Length: 161
Image (cartoon, rainbow, N blue to C red):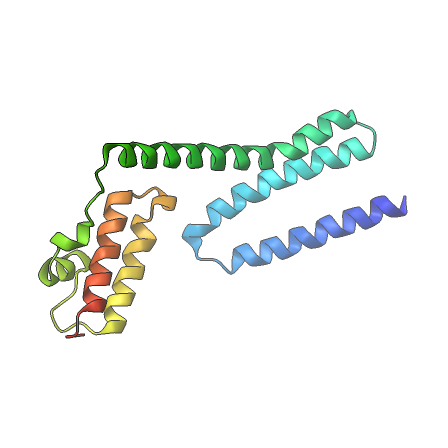
């Protein structure tokens, strides 16, 4: 009985800390945290139900492991895709040219939406603002993110800044 109470106290404390963490995040980022919370609570509930004997232990084990298995499967798939693309490029003997070699200062300023007299802090702030909107992890696109990164690199490497 005491073990169950301790377990419940640990779960409630973890939930409390997680909610405090989510509240400190910007409103746009909260949805992903809430999805994580729901998945984690579902897994914890299955484990708890299996510990109390209301669900067979194997069901609790499988249900508790599903979120982790999903993440491992996604990482494995992304690594396989990345490795196959790299092998294709190496087998063709062609390397991709860096996209920033064709970009000049005026284009970089245009991409970041800056004026010619932009300071280093302005460049960094504009890059951060755009990357928060265009980042591939947030549904953006790899090409645009690389263009924004290249523009920032060109402007920061420029001795005029």
